[in-house]
Structure formats: structure tokens, C-alpha cells
Length: 216
Image (tube, rainbow, N blue to C red; front, side):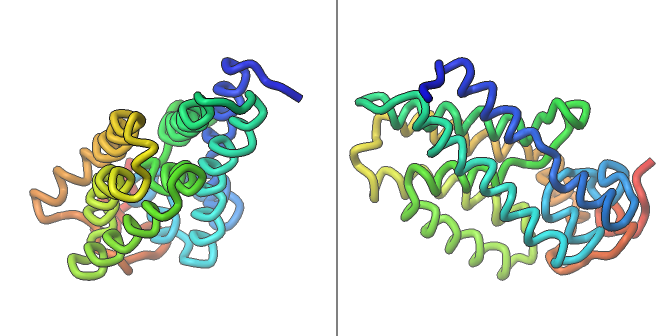
């Protein structure tokens, strides 16, 4: 079956928009994740609210929300010299869906896991390099948000170095990276104020800035 590009973009957005963390928090803890911790609908906030046994499967699903559009859905549009561009467009649509979910009143996560899934489909070695940067920054600083932002930015030079045939897509990779940084703008404010969450702090009702308070 061949999909027209608009249908592929819509399908990619809707897949990305599935609010996995929100659903998991409701099913496992009976809480609205938008009112817990940072209020972010991502695996990191779910980890704080429900632990790693909930967060890991959700993170993997969020990765799949980017990988499937960039591979299977884009593949249904057809192949050719523009196939990488189509894959990236579908992937970006999925990331937008994750960050601005129509199923969660246009709230969502930060796009890191879904963006990583997109890049796994397009430039997997660059993802490995960025994952190393994420691990180094996160475990030395203690801040997942800082590691995520720097890793997203590191993807661009990694693609340039490892995938020279994709250099024409570098502006779009940069757009994806900057979008992830933009989604972390509240985290940047907390980093400057010294109130950002540190990795490893979790628990039901973990509050914004690690205060243990539920958001109003």
C-alpha cells in the first residue's frame, strides 16, 4: 500500500501523540502525570512518579514512536532520492506529536526518546555517539535534562562526520536538536536557579524542582 505524504505525516503525528507516560501513570498509580513532579509527559517524570519498571517500557515505546514513522510509515510513501527527506519529515511529525499531543490537550514530553527513535532509523551510529555524550553528561552532572540537550546538539556533528551523504539534511537535524532544547527551556531556568531535578530522585508525588510537592 502506498501512502500519500500528507496521510503519512498525519499518521506519524498521531502515533507520536500517543501519551504513553500519561496512560502508564494513570493505570499504575492512578495519577495525572501533568500534575506530578515537573508535569512533563515523558519517561523521566514517570520514573520519578512510578519507578523504573514503568519508565523503561514507556521509554522504549516512545523510541518506537519515532522509529516506526521514520522507517515503516515513510517507506509506505515510496523510495527514491527523496526517501531520506520523507523519513525525516515523518519523524519530525512524530516528535511534534509527542511534544504537543492532541490526546493530552497539546501537552507532552520533551521529544528526546522519540527523536532518538527517528535518528535510529536514519543515522544509528550517530545515535550511539550521542548516547555516549548523554551518559557522560548525565552521570557526571546528575542532570538528565542537561545530558539530553547536549546529546541532541551532538547529533548534528555526529551525522556530518559519520553520514556525509546526509549533509543536505543537516539543517533539519539541527532543527530537531534545537526543538528538543526549546522543549527543555523550563529545565534551563531551573538549572540556572539550582533547582533542577537530579537523576535518581523519584517517588509518587515527587515535586517540581525535587520539592516533593504535587503541582497545582
